[in-house]
Image (cartoon, rainbow, N blue to C red; front, top):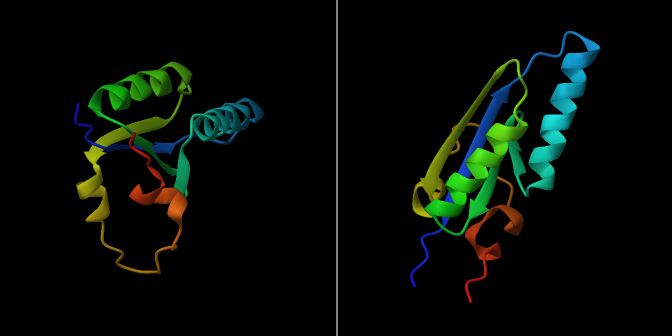
Length: 106
C-alpha cells in the first residue's frame, strides 16, 4: 500500500470581544494542539496526515469542535505542495517537527 502524505491546514478568525468568545477561542485552539496541529503563524495551524482519508477524517473532527461564531477554514494539500511554500518576508524556522522528516513510514 502506498501512502501519500498530506497536510491539513486550519486557518481561523474567531471573535474575542466577550469572555464567552475568549473561552471558545481558547477551547478551539487547545483542541487543535491536542489533535497534533502546530502553529505556523498566528491563527494558522497545520498537521501531517498519512493519506487523504485521514485528512478528511481530521477535518470532520475539527468541524465537530468548531466555535459557533467566527470563521474557520481548512485546506488539504500534498506534502509536495506544502514544501513549495515560499517565504516572502521573515525567515523559516528550521524545525524538524514541521517537516516531512518527522513522518515515519513503516
